[in-house]
Length: 121
Image 1 (cartoon, helix red, strand yellow):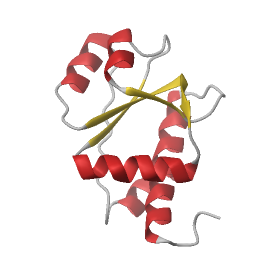
Image 2 (cartoon, rainbow, N blue to C red):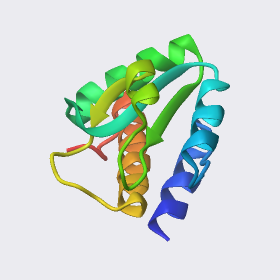
Image 3 (cartoon, helix red, strand yellow):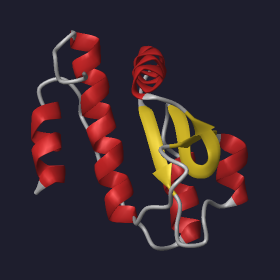
Image 4 (cartoon, one colour):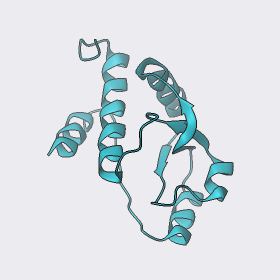
């Protein structure tokens, strides 16, 4: 329900498309045909705060589409790690469901920071 709520809140100003695949080869095909900036979520990636995430997201929007990839149980394929910028949402490890929720909440938070609302305190 939380995911649906954040997607609903984002709908007026940011389009979020969620794609799932369990197959690494299919993941690579999906990612490599997507235009725009690529960010791979990985525990070894750069850890940034919400303000930095907002800056990164909105700078990326200026270049076009923004794509985030969450790796499988074995992590991200090396081909993706080499292609995209590695980001970390936390030093902790989360399930895929939690990671998706945290990512969508951070996208919403970034939008609210950008708009100057009181959501981000």
